[in-house]
Length: 476
Image 1 (tube, one colour):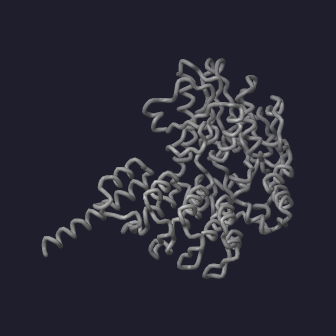
Image 2 (cartoon, helix red, strand yellow):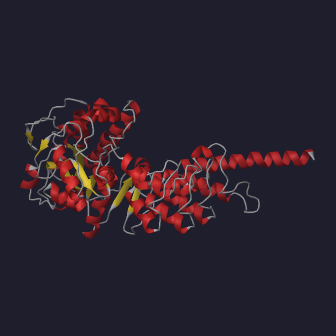
C-alpha cells in the first residue's frame, strides 16, 4: 500500500511539473518546446491532460493560448484534442477559450475565434455572471471578432447579470484614444506591394503564422545572430511600440520600450544601409508630427525648423537622427522620412477605438476641441510609402498628412455625420490627463497645423484629401 501511495504521489508531482512546463512554453510562445513536452510520453502514459486546469494559472492550456493570441499554439492544441468549451475556475469567472480570444485585440483574434468555433466551441457559453463571447468582443472593442460572432449566429440581445447587452458594453467602454500600431499600417502596405509583384520580407519580434504564401519572415533574433539578407532593394521601417496605452504608468520601463522600438531599430537598419556592400536603393522610416510644437496659428511644412521642447518632440527628433544614413551613402540609397499624423482606417487606430462610441451617439470633441488634428487615411499612408519606393526623385522629409487641416471638433462632427449620429458629448481634458498623464496627453489635447507641401510637390495624389471623404469610407 505504501509503495502504491508513493507511486501515486510521484506521478501526481510529475503531472504538476509537466503541466507547469506546458504552460511556461505557451507563455513563451515556444511551439517547439510545447511539442517536445507533449510528445515525451505515449498517449497511454501521459501524466497530464490538455483539458486539465493548471494549478498556478487556474486555466487550461487552450485558454492561456487564446488569451495570449497565439494562433499556432491554439491550432496545435485543438489538433491534439483540446476541448474548446472547458471553463476555467471562478477566479477567471469560469471563462472558456472563446471568451479569452474575444477580449484581446490581437492581430489573430478573429482567426482564433474561427478556429475555436470550427472545433466546437459553444457560442452561447456563459461565464458565472452570464456574459457570452459577444459581450467580451464588444466590451473590448474588437470589431472583426464581433462581425465573426454575429455571422456565426450570436445573440445580440443577450444580457449579463447586470442586465447589459453586448452593445451597451461597447457603448460604455470606448472613451480613450490610441494611435494605430505599425501592424495596422503594415497590413495595408503589404497589399500594395503584392499588387506590384514585390517580394516582401517581414521582420518581426517573433515568427507569426502567415496566411499569404508570398510572405517571407525573419525575426530580430535571427538578425542578431546572422544579420539581415544582403540583397535587399528597399527597407521600410514601421516599428514603434504603442505610446498611448491608457492608464498604463509612463515610467522608465514603458519609456524604454517606446524608445528602443523606435530609436534602436532605426539605428540597426541605418547601420545596415551604411555598411552593407550592396546598398539598398531606398530606406524609408516612419516618424511623427509630434516633432512640431503645438501652436494654434503656425502652419508647419517640411521646411519648418524644429527644436525639441518636450519628451515627445525630443523622442521624434532622436528617432529621425537614429535613422539617418551617412551623406555619401545617400547618393546611392534614398533616405525618406515620413512624419505621419493620426492614421484613419476602419480596422485599426483611432477609428477602431472610437467607432462604437460615435456609433451610439456618444462621441464628441476631446478637451476644448479647438486643437488641430493632423490626419491621413490609411490608404493614403500606404500609398505614399508605395509612391516613395517606386519614385527615384522622392527623398528627404515628407509630411504624411492630408491636405485638409481640421480641428478635433471638426473631426468629431465629420465622424458623427459619416455615421448619421450626433457628436456633441465632449470628453473632458481631465479624463485624458488621468488616462495618459501629462507627458502623453499633450498629443491628444494639443495639436499642430501641418501641411504636406513637399509631399504634394513630389507629385503624390491623395485618394482621400478631405476629412468628409475619408470618414465616409471608414464608416461604410
